[in-house]
Image 1 (cartoon, one colour):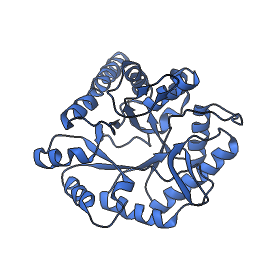
Image 2 (cartoon, rainbow, N blue to C red):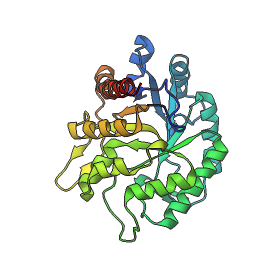
Image 3 (cartoon, rainbow, N blue to C red):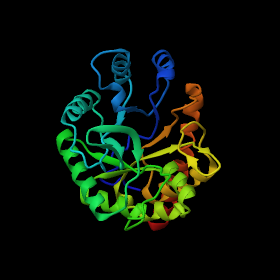
Image 4 (cartoon, rainbow, N blue to C red):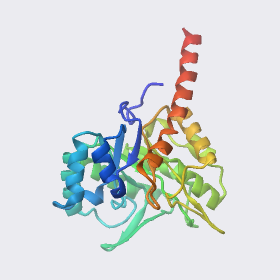
Length: 289
């Protein structure tokens, strides 16, 4: 399946997050990894060990930046000081695209440091799309927005979540970071069919995917990133790959982090879905020729 214009980085296959417990192993052992994802905010300071390690990683690996504080859905104006620091880091890493979350998390300059869900209204979609375009134009690189996991819903919503995501990305003309685990988590918390979500988004805009583990509690499933990926999430990932094609995929593991090898082995499980879909595509091509 040919790459779409938001998914044209064919050398980016299966990545893992660059995390502090794994620094020494990566630098000493130099494992074979397609790419690393970094949390931008962890490397925006001047100097220090994180930036020193990042520079050494950049000598050997491809790096993609992922953010947690642009808050495209907030009403606050964009923080220009933050954007200048972010652009400097983007130039340092040469990240091919930048992702952040479709959420809100700040009011009048006070930051909650949470990824809070939005009301699914046209007004909210217009506001988010405007801010995404502003960030893209300032940073001068492609933007992909991620669907967040949610634990509450707004009575004021005028559409479902995947319709809202579609409205935002079409208005912003940006990509999607499709977090398959977040779709599953939200579907269980709000009782919708997660397959409808994957089938309902504009597949030509999916630039990247996330997979992860989560924790199940009495009332909710929480996106904790501290377990292996469960089978129902792998099944949704398989469906997403079927619809979108092989796409840069990142395994998130951010709490109770095990050894590098365990995280890497879990991430590489995604390759079997790629291979399966490539074989199917090749068979179709042969029948058509």
